[in-house]
Length: 388
Length: 129
Ligand SMILES: [Zn+2]
Image (cartoon, rainbow over all chains, first blue to last red; front, side):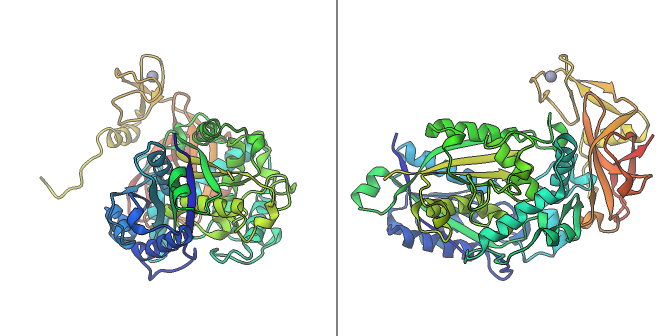
């Protein structure tokens, strides 16, 4: 089985760009990825594209061919949809495509346009990641669903909104200096605590913003990297995916995310590593409670311990396991269909030493990305390692 | 064909049954509970599903208070939603008959059908016992 290297990555600025279409955003990110990789577009054999709400936000389905066209690539191109895990799942498909020997060069990424709709309609579009019959029609929103998980977590494990505020403060801190991040400003615990409620117990600073943006990367086989003398020191060495019952009401527990536990275990086994081997992680912190659930599901912390890890300093930039050095979804932003790919792009740069926060993890060799869809009914986890 | 919106078979029947005071869930031979529409038990794959009466009283296991709604609930905010444990199944709905801020986990509720204030759509409603 061939090894899969990240030859190059590209991001647009994550932020408020209501006038820009997904095709334009993806064109920019993809072009940056090809340039970063130093790979000819003619060599790309397949395109994997993640997008969630194109039909509702842009009246645009069938975005696979559009994604290839945006990059001037004449190759098979498919859209992947798994809510907020859309491009994480696309990355997994791309990795498997290269591993299977079906391609030596693939382009993978995602894009989302969200700010062109009024807030209530964006809220509605995001809500369709939940169960329409049994959740959306009862008035559940996407923040509302995570609020139920947070409420259950407090009930079972204790923990406070103030613990969670430390996660927000940390991720804002990490985004300082990230030119691609939506928020590049510090916040303090007090500000987070006093923010208005969105879906109690979730308040404004517990939630990621509404973001437009795109991410893309070029993945190549070992042999292609060698033949073309590419500078590609980071490989994707593990991939895993999990699913769970769609509606929260049908889960055995509200305080654990088995889809992430399964995806993590699969990715770690695939790479031949343990959670202890991991130097840093980019996890899906669409809400602050989501980061706590993610680092528990990946086996970095026991159930109930993840919520205060940032407060204890264990997941900050100077901690033992820095989490979301990019700023995470919380501060970098969450263009839904682009998020999973952007995590891998950021992680590859962190490990290669080309990220603005690489100094915080100068000796790091193993990183993990965790991308969750809906209330973690879908999850894609990837292991990245420095291989030379 | 008519211009009336189609019913969601199973789901609308479920709401009708709650409204009639005879709520049910689906039960497989292994005793797993699920909610309609179902062809297959999601727990074990059994295909012989029968209707069993839903317990009259359930217990709130998690709740929230929504302040930023979708357009369908603009006039309803703030409101509390809750997941309620009825034993064989959990059901999600809106909690009424109590100030949203006073909703607590562990509270016992009954299930009924209400309408949204925004556009009159039917929805599952819980009321404190
Ligand atoms: Zn069964």
